[in-house]
Length: 385
Ligand code: LRH
Ligand code: MN
Image (cartoon, rainbow, N blue to C red):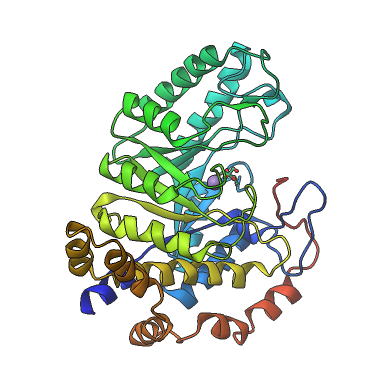
C-alpha cells in the first residue's frame, strides 16, 4: 500500500485556465457569478483546486484567451499562489483568416500568419518557464474536392518542422488529433496515427496528446494509450468525458470504467513515472455546473481511477493471462475496479494535511462567496477573449 500511496501523492494533474471561464455551445454560453475576468483571477481559482486536492499544481494557458502584457509577471503571480504555468495552448481556430485552414491554408500568407502565432507561443513558454506547447488544429474541409488532402499534409509538416526547430532545451510540443468539428468532411489531424506519424518524422521533442473526447464512438482509447506509451510517443492527455461527441464533460463522469481502463494502461506502461513525462491535463467546459467544484470533482475522478488502476493485482493478472484463464483474468481486473478507494484517498489527504473531502472543504471555505462579491463588473472570461 505504501507504494500506491507514494504514487498517488506524486500524481500531478494540470487544470485548464479556460475551465474557469464561461463556456457553452452554439446555442448558449451561460454566465455564472464570480467568473474570472482575467488570467490572474483564473490562476487564483486554479490555486483553490490545488489547495483542496494537493495534486493540481499547474495550469494550462490558452493564447490569446490568456494574453497579458507581462507573462513573466503572470508566472510570478502563479508562484505566489502556489501553482505553476503548464502547457501553452495555441489558437489558430478563431481568426477569420483561418476559415479554410491555418497552417494548411492554400494561401502562403495565412500559413505564415498561423506559424507566426505558434512561434509566439514558444516565446511565451520562454517567458513563463513552460516546457510544453500544445498544438490543436481545427484545420479541415467540409466538402470532397474542396482542397487537396495530400498538399494540406505537406503544408502541415512544413509548419510543424519550423516550430520544432524553434523549440529550446527541455521544450517539446504535443500534437493533438480530433476526428471532426469544426470540419465535417476531413480533418487534417483526425486520428492518433496521423499525429504519431508526423511526430515520429519530427523527432523526440514531438509527442501525441490524447484528448479523450476526440475519437469515433466505440474507439478503444486504452489501446491507443498502450501503443503510444510503448513507442515513447505519449506526451499527455486532455481528459474529459462524453456521451456523444466532443462534449467536454467532467472526466470519468460519462464512463468511469473507460477512465479506469485508460489509467491501467498508463500504470502498466510506466506512464505515472515522472521520467516518462506524460502530462495529465484536463480539457473541459463547465457549461452549467459551478466551475471550481467541477474541477475539484474532475481531479478526484482521475485520482480515484488511478488508485483503482494501482490496485490491480498484477501478479495474479499475469498468471491468469499466461494460463489463458479468461474469466480469471477479467475477475482480477474487475476486483480492482469494484474496489471503493474513497476511504484510502481520504486517509491519504489527511496524511498530507488536507481535508478528507475536498468538495466539502471548498464548499465551506467561503471562497465562492468572496469571489461572487468581489468580481462585479468587468468582462467575464470566456472563449471569446
Ligand atoms: C479542441 C480542444 C483543444 C483546445 C480546445 C479548448 O476541441 O480539445 O485541446 O485547444 O479544445
Ligand atoms: Mn483538447
